[in-house]
Image (cartoon, rainbow, N blue to C red; front, side, top):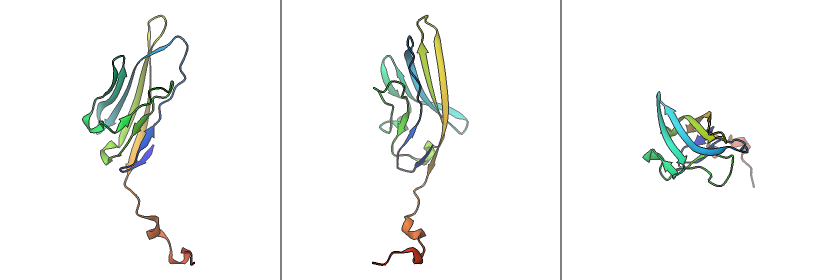
Length: 126
């Protein structure tokens, strides 16, 4: 997934809810420079943003079953990295099932205005 500096992006994480399974926890973590940090966690007590630098910038849909995608606003260059969505369900026989998906996020600097790339011959004369 690519995003633009100071723009926003959505890191996808979707699944098909199954009968008899209850979502217990949802977490998003970021791996960068060989260290892993949990950014966001949703559990029985609510939503928790674990890293202060993401407060006010990340959100996960609340009322969309099967959609656990992470929305990041005001992207910063240090947001580059590998984002892992982990969902844990409890089944009717009380066993836990865990699924994970990892997506790489690349933040790029804003491109110069396109007009600076136009060739003089391509400008439209009124």
